[in-house]
Image (cartoon, rainbow, N blue to C red; front, side, top):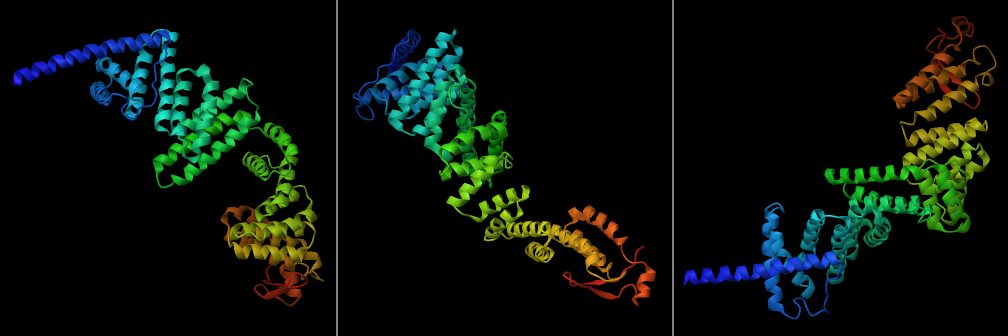
Amino acid sequence: MKTKALTFLTITTFFFSGIIALSANDLNNMRLSGKKLFVPQDQGKYGSDSAKCVMNLSLYREFYKQWRASGFKNPAIDDAIGSWRWVFDNCPQASQNTYIDGLNMMEFFMKKAKGDDAKAKYIDTMMMIYDKRIKYFGREGYVLGRKGSDLFKYMPEEYEKAYHIFKKSVDLRGDKSESFVLVYYFRTVSKMVDDGKIDKGLIVDAYDQLSEIIDYNLEASKGDPKAYEGWENVKGNIELSFEPYATCEDLISIYSKKFEGSPDDTPLLKKITGMLDKKNCTESQLFFDASVKLNELEPSPTSSYMISKMLVKKEQFNEAIPYLEDALNIENDKTKSDIYLLLSSVYRQQNNFPKSKSYALKSFDLNPTQGHALLIIGDMYAASASECGNNDLTKKGAYWAAVDQYTKAKKANPEIAEIADKRISIYSKQFPNTETVFFYNMKEGDTYTVECWINEKTTVRVAK
């Protein structure tokens, strides 16, 4: 009984292998002749002949597994392809593996094919497999990313088709887009721009879109060092590809036209200011105009602060003050400290030393490492020395107070120690000599209050 069963199994296997081998040859001939595979009307998961569908599905999968187990080297693929074709044609909804496995097999045959025409026909079949997978199993954005990658990888001359496939994939997937899809997509965008097939401005739009996706995934993968490193590499790759198109001149030229056409478009204004800021093009008139317009439409402490810094650079101090005052509504104490510091600098430029000192102290109170605030106070003390006294001693007293501020500044922020030490050296030489201190009935170490606007207690010292 066992012998008969084995004989039957052997004959059956031989019979099916013959059919499968014949089907494989038929399939290859159809591919090479350019004919399309027949796709029947939907007839349920297992088609009109469910028994035959299950049988062919099982047969092709078994041979496929053998081929895969051999490292894709043994000839079992030739036995698998016929049954695979039957399933693909007659019960396309039976299993998603039909499409995953089919792509691997077509890729294998494509790499072995001789001649560009033969290879192209296999690639065409791969594209059809992707389309059919989308039709029956959805996940359009995900599948399109892979379709575009294979097309661009194996037929780079078809970059325009790949560009449209990638664009749709990224638009559909957004933050869920896979990293390799973003890299390939940006390469096709660059190629399209280089060949004059799309406007140069679109590469900026694509870069902006992909940067947001990458930043999202970098933030999401902070707990996974390997994933984070992967996204960092993708960011570097795209940054490098974008660099030739990222000159301030190019960006300003591209965005100036858009700004003139839609000056009240808030998303556009955010894109313009964000991109120009990222690429250090903040000294341009476009950046200033877009920032002011954005602040009119959507007032915010952050944009007010940005505008104020530009006005200070232009030495338009009076115009900068209202923006700085608005910027003080910002919640971050460190940034608020910087705003107070800039206000202090502005009032110093206007020779309003009392107000400048008031803002400098507020800056230091919010950020005890803000040594620059104390440098400003020291500089104003030193500049006021001759006005804050009426004799050879009192006209030197402000230098003691100035050196006190420089000493505090370098303790607060060691990074500015060299600057502070140079000023200490300069103004210590301006201290009164021993004779002058003695003449006015004082000695080293005594407490002294500097008068006028300074109103600061300090310690008597003599020049060394």
